[in-house]
Length: 97
Image 1 (cartoon, rainbow, N blue to C red):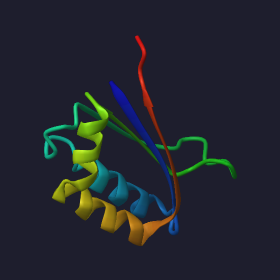
Image 2 (image 1 turned 30 degrees about the horizontal axis):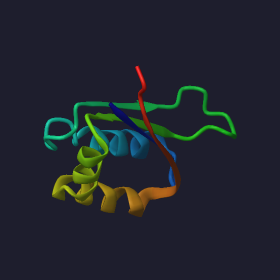
Image 3 (image 1 turned 120 degrees about the horizontal axis):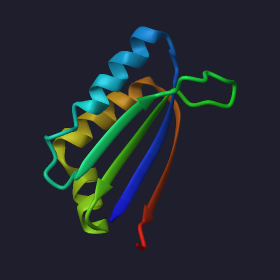
Image 4 (image 1 turned 135 degrees about the vertical axis):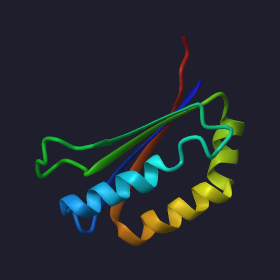
């Protein structure tokens, strides 16, 4: 199992913009066949070091993660995210259970 985690800091971190962005990300659910599980969360601490939104996605394999990255729905969401994000960090890891 591959876990894909992305943290987003938005240019405009107003509650309305955060909610709209969360909804756009959540819109991936059920639209990309390789996506096994999706969780999108909004930061509740709001500290200086916090990021605004976290995305956690699960895939069966690196091949499926690659297919997700290229899927037209993901590409469209990524275009939106690129227009509203200040920065993003990601980590992808394989579970060894």
